[in-house]
Every structure is written in structure tokens, then in C-alpha cells.
View 1 (tube, helix red, strand yellow):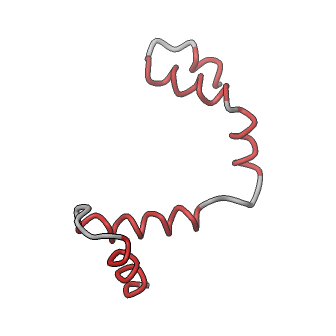
View 2: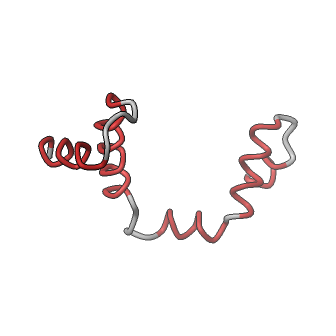
Length: 71
């Protein structure tokens, strides 16, 4: 099915399918193992959400205090 999508006339679909084919080992491992980076990605997303309203004006010390206060 991925090979059929690679030959499709839609550039977005064929590019996505080609990427899946080139990373087939990583895709297979990601779909068959229990381990994932979900908790880490969630923590990074939470920190970015806290950081965004500060618009880069605050330094690391204030960001650290804000993260610790909100956790």
C-alpha cells in the first residue's frame, strides 16, 4: 500500500510515503514496541506553553521559577 502511494499523482502523499519507506526500520520499531517519547514530549510541550507568553523577554531564572510554580 505504501508503494502504491509512492507512485500516486499527489505530491504530498507520494512524498510522505517515500519518507515512510526510507525510515521503514524506525517506523516498524515505533509501531511494535511499548517504548515511546510521549512523556518527554508532553513535558517539553508544557514548558513551551509556559514560555510562550513571556515572548523571550525573561531569562532562564524566571522561566525556571515559572515551571516549578506551575508543576
